[in-house]
Image (tube, rainbow, N blue to C red):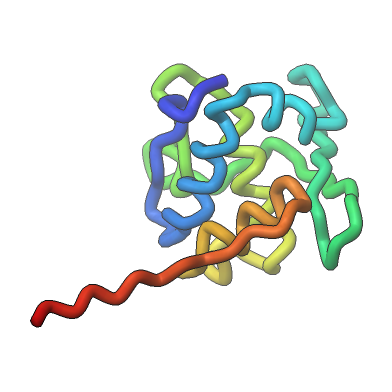
Length: 128
């Protein structure tokens, strides 16, 4: 597991992809999110997310929206890694669709990914 596994797709959720990549700097952070630890024939995976401050299991399958030639529309990996694709699907499930995850703040995503407080700081530069 590595931040370099993730390649953003057509979904406008770069803020979420950035949050995933930052957590992947310490792979155990991502590994600990997965309740289902291995790829399985059923294609069903349970993941821990923090919803309204409560650790919650979110269950998804491994059916991923693809374009006409089989490339994932969401994030993907050149190495065939599944973890980021599944976590993006969990995020989409939490919001009702991939489209509803367009535009956001990494701090918001980070809070749901690890349950810890996260803040955004906007710096204004003023030149005199």
